[in-house]
Image 1 (cartoon, rainbow, N blue to C red):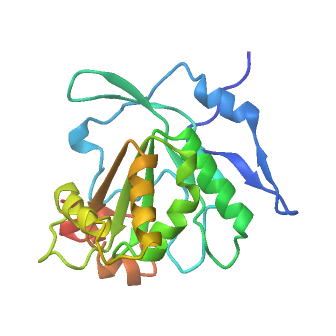
Image 2 (spheres, rainbow, N blue to C red; image 1 turned 60 degrees about the vertical axis):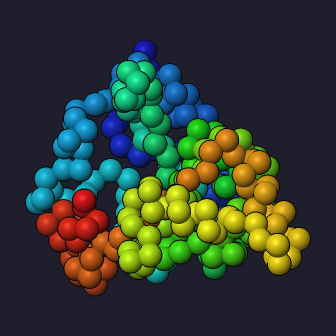
Length: 231
């Protein structure tokens, strides 16, 4: 009998020294055919305690990328939807795109593979949705037909749009609105995004707080995170 994977992130897609991606089929198979699901915390306490360091996927603050390839959590999470249906959630973390270390092939491969295997893809963006964010996304949109969520972090315009999905939906409608005077290229871009995904939504999130971004010893404790972000 094969030994199960330890609980934690597992590297299922790696980037080799010669800039090629390699899939670890055995580890992926162990995760997808896992017989157990974890659900130690209820919905009310999933965020953890105030003095509890952040654990899970490896992370660090700074200007350079941290995640390389694709990581998947070693065990699925069983959750119950409001309608009573039970679902198994597999969490993945992927490397970012369009940085100074990534080639065009890497960007396309990572994003396309993520869209193909995910029922929900979270597109992490800082401050607001720029035109180049939509253009980058349109390159990969044809690979998917499920849900896309824009996660706009460090949202600065609470007076105009409230934090959360409600404000995000209003903001997204403005971003994807097709206007008469827009160039045809931009009109086509917006219509394609709506056509390629069954659902497109947006979540506006506040800044984590200065103690998080400027503190040299921040380890993820909730006590240092801004109240607006936790709410």
